Amino acid sequence: MTPRPKRILFLFSDTGGGHRAATEAMIEAINLEFPGKFDCKMVDFFREYYPAPWRFAPEIYPTTTKIGVWGLAYRSSDGRGRARALTGLQYPMLRRGLHRLVAENPADVIISVHALVNAMLPRAMRKNPSPFVIVVTDMVSTHAFWYDRRADLILVPTEPARERGVKFGVPAGNLRVVGMPVADRFNDPIDAAAWKREQGWREDLPTALLVGGGDGMGPLKRVAKAINYAKLPLQLAVICGRNEELQADLRAVRWQIPAHIYGFTHEMPAFMEAADILISKAGPGTISEGFIKGLPIILYSRFVGQEDGNVSYVVDNGAGVWAPRPREVVDTLREWTENPQELRRVAQISRSLAHPQASRNIARIIAEQCGVEA
Ligand code: UDP
Image (tube, rainbow, N blue to C red):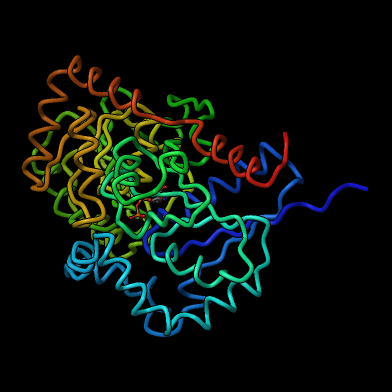
């Protein structure tokens, strides 16, 4: 008799696009590495199991980041003692939902992909614990909430994130640097020239790809307009994600350079393969994907707190620049288009930071936790 597939429960939430993308990347890798051996389930714990107002976190999140509340809450809670105190305060209100979550989703291993469930879950499953693995999806400025010492294993994307774990008291043996889980498709070969022809992109001009996370966030419109007015020798591809208003606004612009405006796309690997420069909000998913495609990166905005470290990681390693003013984005584009050698040098550094096998390696580690062999 074939053994029943092992059940993996992924706890994530749609606060931003990154948690979902990382979770889907891991599930894809598990199914590729171990076909038929695992049954994976994703649960948005905020939406499905937390009471109001927590339940509305995915809806509230874009506003809280925009008006600065998120950054304030992030920084003021980022310490071991403060994180523990906040967990203690909130737990009584979340306990019922958490017990229901554990009871309704029996699993051989639970994987958390979100900082805000890590301290709660071990309390909720105290009587009947399942193996518990945390996959950290912030690159460097990883919040204290990520590091719960009761987790069996904590997988982190970078060495600085590992060091923060040690600082927060996680035993070094329970921390492993694996990189950010990114969709396997980013490793597939793509014919960039054919893609450009298909999209009607000029083949004689470098392409700057402008993105603002899954929701087209940050001052993307101002950046796009500044690039337009500068009339640099390049073409622009803008991905507005789910932000339809932004898409309509950009379509109405009188473009002075070749410009291509898109809504949410499932073809990010092709866009990045065909582009020469990535201009992005400091989202960890997009940055990690840019590394795989060896793209020099201009970061034009970040979420205060959570994404600060993503900026320093890119800048300190020399894979790109921090350009919070549209003028600075233009200056960097001018410098790079005038000096292709410099552009190639930065591209090489970017590629050297990539972890293209992160999702597959995480899949193997999860399988190990369940005693499953390839
Ligand atoms: N993304 C996508 N299509 C789009 C826009 C974004 O697939 O049209 C993906 C992008 O490739 C990345 C994720 O959405 O995997 C965004 O994650 P990131 O961590 O960069 O930012 P977030 O949206 O979480 O703030």
